[in-house]
Length: 373
Image 1 (tube, rainbow, N blue to C red):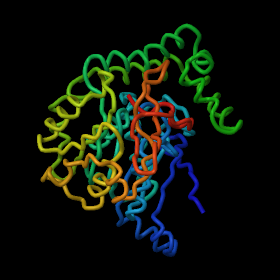
Image 2: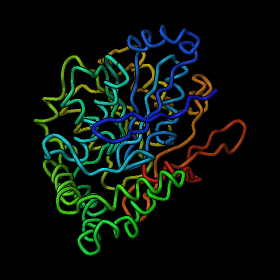
Image 3: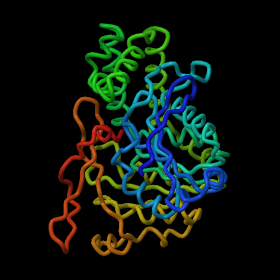
């Protein structure tokens, strides 16, 4: 029987999450499971964009591989995404940006689940949240995987417009009801789930104070992107060097199949340098054969100082797939319309003997319609 998502109340709102336990641990008694879980590795997966995390295609291959390896996985819908509550009442004395508020929500969620420590995997916007979490709660973090982060002026300008400027214009002209009806992202978000969820979240949006909650939250979140644009949005070299705690292991993944000028190999190389200079990068632009190496990273707890252990990704994709029995489901790729996000793409098998990893059909799951930026 598949485990079902649950809700936890954190920072005054309901956050939807799914904590998946490997089969071997499920066989334990309930009391033993809780004790066992606190001592086991748990990896938190946070995709990019404003997409929900539960059922998201972005980390589906990694999620399955981690569970198969005996590592528990926590996926979650950040506030204002997936099927979690919508709230712009950001905590931390009214000074938090969206990334910082998400980090605070995740901290409270981890506490509610009685987890001692976690490892984190974040892509793009989820990577910014991951860095914000590590900066605020380093003692809770064991290992970190960062995938396809954004950096540079072009990224800051595009994301400012798609995430903040456009919806702020709608809100100033027509109020919060206009946001619910006219903004491409929020109108789509409010159509998700059962009617009871739709009604609850509609109420949450239209009852939001424009002047005291929504506009300040948008302003702070925009400023967060611009406080540093290099090496990555929101984090300068100095900030990253302070995050690079010697007790936390990092690994980076660059898996873009095409360059959009925001998620670039150069950004990931600069990030590696800022985090200490010896952070390995799994450079795999045409598929997900980085997944076995990432699982090895999380399973071993190693810092992987010897880059040769992970850097040499075989060119023979079919052989790598057969050796590791990893099902390649999706590849991140195409830019989505309206609000600058990206849709996952699935790969097709062209023949029995050859796996074609060229981008093909877009993943049509609603949760995967905005998974980058």
